[in-house]
Length: 88
Image 1 (cartoon, helix red, strand yellow):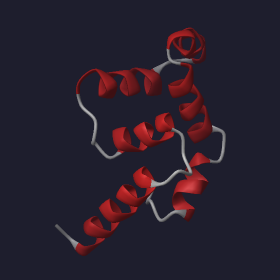
Image 2 (cartoon, rainbow, N blue to C red; image 1 turned 180 degrees about the vertical axis):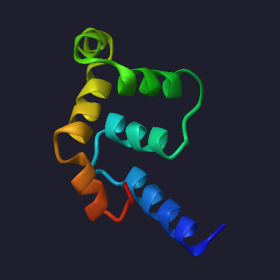
Image 3 (cartoon, rainbow, N blue to C red; image 1 turned 135 degrees about the vertical axis):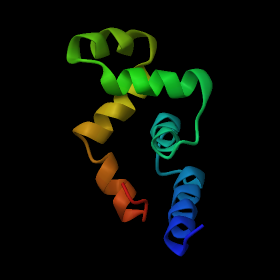
């Protein structure tokens, strides 16, 4: 593993241990770095691919996950992660 990869995983681990993000925001980061599997990974894949209409429908069942995705896309989650040292 390269030094850069080690540093990335250290930053991700610190972010996941931090109280600065919601559980769903942390799960989104896990998904982005391939740390999820099974249903949860497939759910994030579907959320990421959903158009606005379907995302609205999915929010009825998964409101926290849709909120995290929204924070990533249009909010400040990506900026907060970069500040924390997570390369996004």
